[in-house]
Length: 260
Image (cartoon, rainbow, N blue to C red; front, side, top):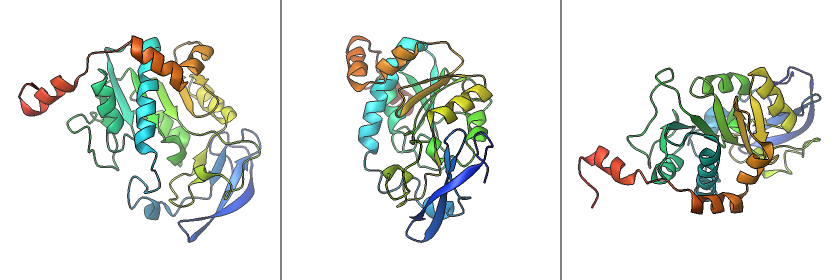
């Protein structure tokens, strides 16, 4: 099997049992370190529910990412423009960001919008966004390059989270992020594989070398991005820089009434 990122040869380093019944081989690229599964024929089983039941960190993750996103937007982007959360799930991040004063919209074709009703994004091609966020999305992508190209049709800047895999990769039974219990994770990135994606699309890569990454045409400070991705630093900035919440305006837009 060739690497889905750089087309180099891969090797099988282990097998895992997905959803308790699918024996799956895991391959690591000898060139960029990217890890991929067999052709994921089990995805219909994996997505009987869009959000898997073991994702118990969803609320905490969105709370933390909303603070980090606010700090990064405040420092590097125009906070007055529109933003889009790709693969936005229940809409929790969009609601949190709108409550923080950022004009965020949600895009997710596979999940019910529970928290950000009325703020789904328009179809691609109807307008550009200052920044696209894609948190815990990249590990779900069967063809990362093709999906990244699609995301770039919304925005030339993509802030995303995904846990980086080590080289050599841990055995499928030895790392929780493989998600054997739910089967939705099929792509696992190294820094080198992200650099290759960035170069292919003419983007700059900024990362904290762990889980938070930014692809953009902007030229920024890598050190500054790494600092802003730290929870304590982001919280300090959040205390200093705050925007007026869109909650009252959203309530009026949805109900026609003032929030009093």
